[in-house]
Amino acid sequence: MADISSLSVFAAIQDSGLRITFDTNIRWRDEELDLRCGDYGQPVLLGEQILMEIKMPGACLLWLAHILNDSGIYPTSFSKYGTCYKNFIISREGFLSA
Image 1 (tube, rainbow, N blue to C red):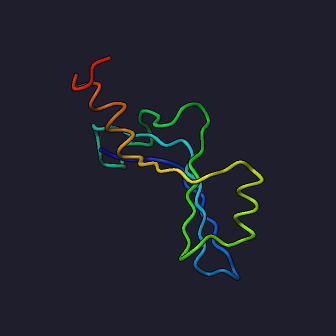
Image 2: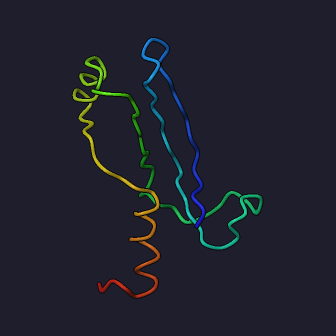
């Protein structure tokens, strides 16, 4: 299975361990796995959803916690591979009933 997406990465200058990434247009395919075959695949997220991942050592920085809270952004767990497997592969193979 190939995971294809557009990725933007931002790293803090002062807080060297902080890194924030935004994945857009996340797609998957299980044929022609060589990425030289083209930039295509089935979308993993709905519409124009964006996956934001925050990586930092230790506890969340206070200024970042305030920004996230004020924006209504809260921690959650998400796996691109798990979502693809559950939503596409298992249902396609008939392992899940409707």
